[in-house]
Image (cartoon, rainbow over all chains, first blue to last red; front, side):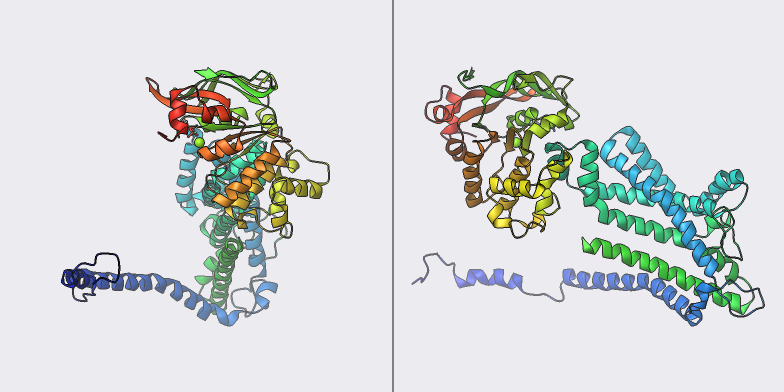
Length: 299
Length: 265
Ligand SMILES: Nc1ncnc2c1ncn2[C@@H]1O[C@H](COP(=O)(O)OP(=O)(O)O)[C@@H](O)[C@H]1O
Ligand SMILES: [Mg+2]
């Protein structure tokens, strides 16, 4: 007698089906799964090793020298003790600031052109392609380029030349991330604005750009982080300076070049300053990255 | 083909022998239709027959599509909408649009409504306009305490009424709606339909709908579109256009009869 109105098949015919649902720890499929999971974990661990090692290294070497003095004093002469790299810290802020002042507006405007005004055209495809090429150009080549463009024409090494070189490095990162961010804004949002009688410019300025801002800022932060640590292009452009910066048209010290100069000297004090400089650079990049994360989260 | 033009009522939008192309593809042919003022006109028909295409021609939204071409005439108060002296942006400010998928901006409810008026530097009392628009779309009581919350936090039905309020805030003449209820639940759909009856006091409404009951319940005039295979692809056209009760109770065309009685489509 069935208690339900549905026909129930015989128990015996269900047994085979149910057996197939049970776990089979020794089947080839399960074993393969286990092995692959282990391999994935090992690879992930290997990938994290250099990251942890770098952090540990700069903390260990540079941590002991961490003090306010670093930011208020000039680098000491070779045999002296103490000192800091206040000029190089300010120099890094200045060159990165000049680079950002050029690259952020240019990059975002170029991205707006590519995704909102020229999307799908041949011109846009070419610019997109060239941007990708530019992002692959080694930074030392960018330095040589900035040297001939700015240093030779201005008649000397300068913060401006360094900032220009950094701008060239930042530009493709900003253009690419901003173009991608703009492309993520749903087409419906543009249609809604146009349907209400917004002009093209109003649509971009009031709807598309605000919606894309958080990921654009992430790209900007990435570019700033990348630029803060660049050394090669600055050696040809900003050079170095043992004194406080007096303006933007003179050679200027930067943290990355200071690390490069001091790490290879035989003097212990200089080496320690290089290590502390590395630590500050790593901290700056980390703060920029965390900042970009926070921006995305807030959205 | 029967197309009545109802001369006793002054048409606000009218189209004459319009052929609409996407590239070389003739999407809709021979569109001749007069849309009477302060009425609700429904476009019905199987998908792909060009209802949205025709609707979007009325406020020049198709201009955004590069391959789009229109031959023939589309008039608004007797003025050719496609004459070179006409600014499409100005047209869209007079002839608003509500889309199939509710698409509020990722901004506060207040800013969603104020968006359009701000585009034209509206000088009046913005708070008052926001309230009036939200009341006009029967949303005020539900959102009056949370005007600063995101428009995206509302339910689908509320979002669509927000989009209607946003269109009303521009104080347009005509509101075009492209399947505004297709993403809504039945209760929200009824709310929007009730709203349509209030809106037609002030505005002229053209609504595309897939829902036959909706067309027969909510509209005054109905245009039935169909689509036929021709040598240039699947081309849509208007089979019959008349008062809604005629289309549903006494259609002149066999195809209309079959469609409204649910025999195809
Ligand atoms: N942007 C476009 N580009 C090319 N063809 C399109 C475009 N939009 C619609 N079509 C075509 O035009 C015809 C009519 O489409 P549409 O107006 O969306 O029909 P409906 O709204 O009645 O379903 C269809 O064949 C569709 O594929
Ligand atoms: Mg459609």
